Image (tube, rainbow, N blue to C red; front, top):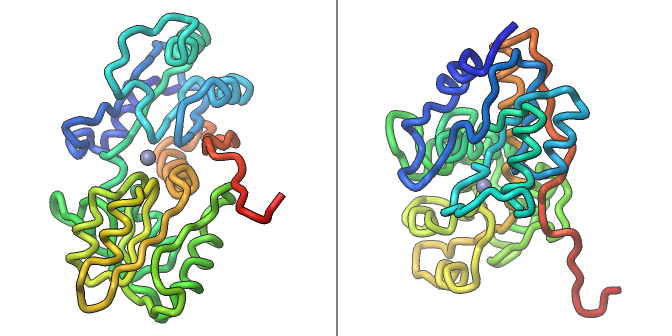
Length: 271
Ligand SMILES: [Zn+2]
């Protein structure tokens, strides 16, 4: 029988809290003193995820995104945050997150995406300490055209409504790949300064993307924009097996709830 304080030690080993960015808020937002009955992993904490946790008999939800991050003023039961949190408290479901501290480590969010893409000679795109850091840069086993690389990215990720969007010449050859799980436009400059042929991340905006593609360098940098949820969801299986290895007796599940807010996309001429 294990309790939250014991599992918290495992989380600290996997994703040391000291590795989190100063603005970040990982850790527990709700706890209880009960024995652990099961753990559910998710990218985001929503009402549907908590309902799934209850249905699966899990009293701990481990999320990538912190549930309370930006200046929450109240948790009234009829508000978005309050309704979810009061459900968690009423049902004795603890909620924990490992965010930027899970981004930077080995087998963390960016590392898992890089490995799924088959990249080798992996290094952080921006180092923060010995062998850890933001994003990853690595090499494809075989150079390929950008179009084929984008198809590989789409194959590796779960389905997302907006798919994979590409900025760059479809026939450009790519062999060195930089990537960052989540909204990585703050690392575009690092990608431009690196040997990367292409940078894969999420939530890319018009101006930084346009500027990056036009920035003079030996070879233009291509950019690949992927669903934030889809990219980060790849980490869940890996995190689940790390937890399971440390605590064999505790049931560990990956949530079946898709928290990607984008449901469909349509283009001119399509119905
Ligand atoms: Zn994220």
